[in-house]
Length: 393
Image (cartoon, rainbow, N blue to C red; front, side, top):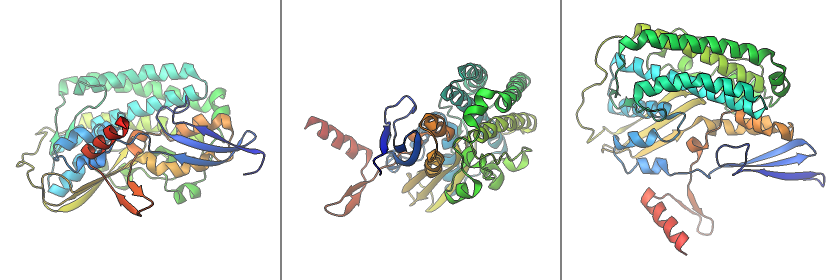
């Protein structure tokens, strides 16, 4: 580091970051020349906690990995257990899972668009978008009883059915959201406030994005077609007509366009689901999960932020031997670091917000003793006991 360069710490508590994480920025004047991410402040020991709880108990844990992606995590978890246990869910349950997942995608993308507008100082758009997002939140609350943690997927199907008498009214809500989203596309592509703060900011080429294994809207904004709903269809996505959205901008404007265009596609999917949803049961009857056959399964879903993976290993008992979660934010850390390099200090908040980071999903932890060259993990109870002893010292 030269005499002209300085290190600016951002986080773990900072107005630009809504979650506890830390980045060390090496700057030369107003230009960012290097970035060192430091994650781990939000670790909760979820994976280890799942290894000492039954498959049913873990339903309540996986849904709380992330508040915004709660349905995506539970869909991925139930899918992995169902594959490991050889459980096939009813067709109607598949459609209901897709319906709730696309509603969650709508609310997440609209939330992000409002946050992005706020980060660049366009608070009028922020208020408009979040006003329209309430239509989605009200619909989710009507279906599940909750605005967060909808508790819809369960092992073998879904917990709640949808009343077809409500479908015409829901279609009108979807029409309203589509109409408003079309307006936001026009604003995003013509409003000078957005263009000045988005064009060329946080640029990353398609080749670099592929090398850094980015996922989700972050990767699709650089021209990488990586939507799991198209590449590795699950549930009933292979039967639905929707576009694979990606653009070659490579900058913040590309991330805005991908999300608003995907919002339109989600509206299209929701209409098809309401139209094509078959009658029938919403749960598969199976014996108690006292034992799940030995084996392993990985289940991929396209969460709002990108490819989400739940990987479970069964050793024949009523709880997983190992359960691994790979959240999209973890996959996008390397690419956002490269997006930040060469940019201005003033652009740090919007570039970080561009990947829609969720460190509740991301943070993992292992223990390592350098002196003894030993690594190990703890159960939730052991970690809680150590924390209590440490604070009492």
